[in-house]
Image (cartoon, rainbow, N blue to C red):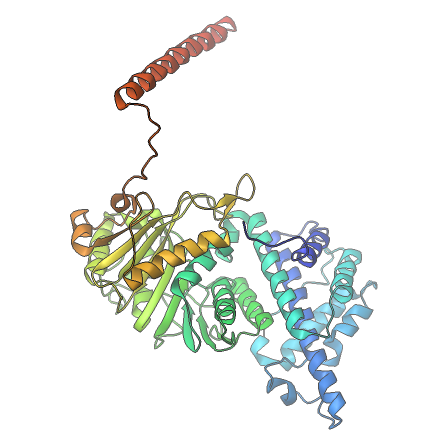
Length: 502
């Protein structure tokens, strides 16, 4: 099993554990802003500090010139917002005011951050003593001599805290966070490359983009060589995504404001190489009555009560000629026939756009337990007229009682299976994977449930003859029924003795 070791998550967990003391009586969503804001402030402070020292050493007097920072894609930090000022005030009653003033000064100096940063640190609900201790953690546990290492550490801390908030906020947490195992699987299968355009029309906190950049860098590319386009309708989540991209050094276009993707598409002319998304499951009242004649509904008008096929068609509309989509949907989208959804699915299948379907295990999400499916939609598929089906429901391991995760080996197995299918050297495995033609899918009424195509996993022969096994199992079942009836009668007798009848 591959995962982080204790030293890897030491700082992240330290920040989280210490910051939890701050929680007090403020709502989780407000508390989230406090933590992600501090991480962001520390990041831009450390990047600025390194560049400042470089410029000062050159002796040309440019260390206080904003342009000298912007040319290196670094935010200019005014004096009152520098981490040294914040750190010096850590154990004063004014620490909250100092941080709020720092956030305002940074926004004033950097217009792209206008109205993005949180400014709630002076709130009386925040324990200023603990806030100072968290500031100390950032000050004392980070070596600023290597900005890349610091950036990665802060980025990991940001991701770690966002994941923890998703757990604490339950269903609401699912609005801004997609579990890393799902994101990594989508990215590994899509295999994004340098100089590509990546788009997410419901980007949450931007996890798809972070993982894409990591993937490209891990495969000997430059994580900066990626054009990122996103959109998010929730104002707080949009701000969180902006900060996440800044910490990661990713230049992203999220539009000038948060906006509803269906009503106000901020990237109307975009044709993306890769689209990765986890849209809201089964979203109702998404605005169909006002969008009936929209050009995006090439394969049929989606029903008012469910936006699943609106999301799918929006993404197809934004695909480049060789573009690929990886998205997460609730399982109902595989087989629904209601309100014209079956006809839309049929039209998309007949257009030879569905490259693969992966049935995922339950309990991958922090917010919902329902099973989900990964859809992979491609223009100009390598295997024309065929779709790959994978049943991954038995994969992964239980992290705890409620949450399942994938190992790196699980993700590699899924990506390798896709690669083999695309390259034409794919072998079907009963109960795990199979390929089906459009004609075969049509015979199944265009239902895309993997179980219809992959068959049942072959069982090992235990040597017991079939007739004998059936007699034994039937006798065991009969005995269980008998014991069940005996237990039922015993319960009835005991309830009757205390005056209850059922």
